[in-house]
Amino acid sequence: MKLNGKITILEKVSSEKNISIFKSDDMTIISTQTPIKGSGDDEGGDVNAVITIKTKNGEKKVNMSGYCGI
Image 1 (spheres, rainbow, N blue to C red):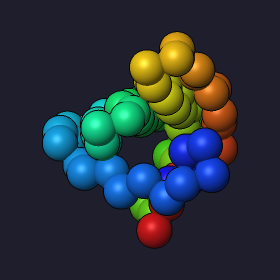
Image 2: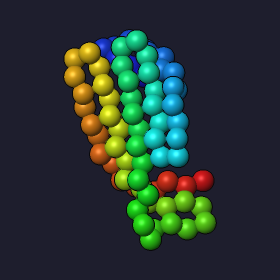
Image 3: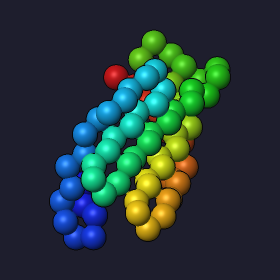
Image 4: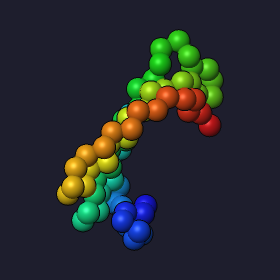
């Protein structure tokens, strides 16, 4: 990931069914997925995702939705 023009390596520190947390000295990224009921098939389904990026200067949340499958 690039932060302030510099490449930053993030380490995956936690992972559960629908949440993953990545950290470095400068930032934390939390990825949360929520399946949308009734939209699934054998290969995947629609999800709502929230990506939270925390830095020493603040926090930003990005909401997304789309299809997640294999």
